[in-house]
Image 1 (cartoon, rainbow, N blue to C red):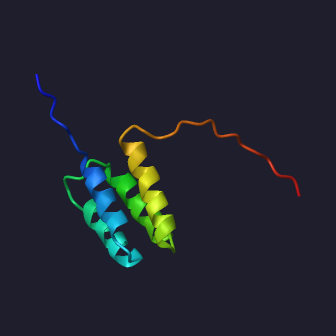
Image 2 (cartoon, rainbow, N blue to C red):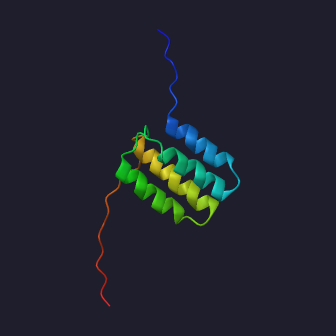
Length: 89
């Protein structure tokens, strides 16, 4: 049997974002994808992603955020324990 190669829709969106040189255009690609009704990401999380993506002021920070988010939704995210620290002033 021949295995067909599957490509993720998220991966194609990510490739489009990386091919852009302008942050605003890349942000529009992301928001257009997240606004689609057939998007695989739950609605509440899509809204949060749009909010955080808008806070990215450079192209590199936007690309980093989108990459980390998409890796999480594809099940490839890095699992780590979060250590809570208490600060005293």
